[in-house]
Figure 1: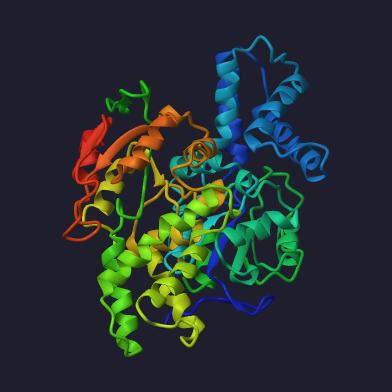
Figure 2 (figure 1 turned 90 degrees about the horizontal axis):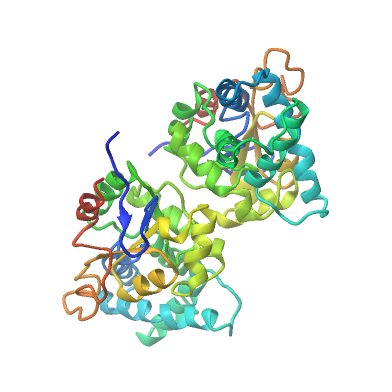
Length: 248
Length: 248
């Protein structure tokens, strides 16, 4: 076979696995969450701006993980953080969560398990998988990522959830423990992500890097991560384009 | 959809995930290892009974894990145990391992990553996967199980290696930590295995159980595990038959 594995300039090693940030890079969390929030609002006669609600719910994500990254709180899986943040987001929108049936809120919380893939994701991952190991490298927990994969048809080879590494990106151990489970050197693994800060941390940990532009992740007014802000090994506008750049 | 998830009589819960013992149940370790041992012997001008060598190498598997299960040794991944046991098996067959190139032994050790599936495995797993989560529940480490899946085309949804649970079957935590990563109750998970002792431990941990007969796992003279030795929820002669029994 004449196929050559991609050699990352930043690591000078052949890439064996291409791992993907998921929320925003592989799946469209804003559309998926807003859709389920709108259905919840309609079913319970609440007036809600579903997109704004999705943005507010998502805005509580980094602060919740920061308590864990800083050591103030022991590791807690993302499903639990999302559930806590849902209560907070409801209060921000004038809805007291306590009277809402517990099962309803659990189900709404699982909207993060049912996010739709970007149109190019499944085809691009399938192409890359022919020559490289593919998997998520996400702050999602295993069961969330598994449900997401089954619902959206994401053809992962392996799922290493943050509950397996016991830590959250962008801490270095999130990347390094993942490469250890794969029995690969950091330089044999490439992170593909729509977020420059994720790629910066991955490169510091020794991984190869690929930026995938997702200019509508945060809706029409997005101002951050519109372009690569680093000398990343590869830059693509979709996962199918990344597959071409990888020769896959 | 009229499809009903299987309800395990022993747990009275709907099964959501069917997990498989791998060595012997999904893949034919004896044939796979013997084939690579024979190639190694031919390349290095050794006279070896390849099947007997595979049996001896495998016989060192349980004692090596027992040192870890009993607490005498801290958790060590199966690739490392296999590599240590390879040296011992070579000595048993009159071959001193030290002069053999290290890369050659590492490569032979990876024969466990390249085991062939039984003829019914891929089709049966694909059928079950349409309605249930499928994955290994094996003492193999993640990278071994991942390579095995890619080489044999095993369509797992998720791989939870023993290096993720940090323990070895049949200790209860091996089963229970796996169900925790899946965010499922033990009774929502079924273990399918060709080994009665594995099923006994799985049932004690609360899992559903399916026996799959593999009467030639140990070659033509096999005397153990020829038939179910317990009131297992399901009994099948192949993974395709298990799929039928599960209604998948």
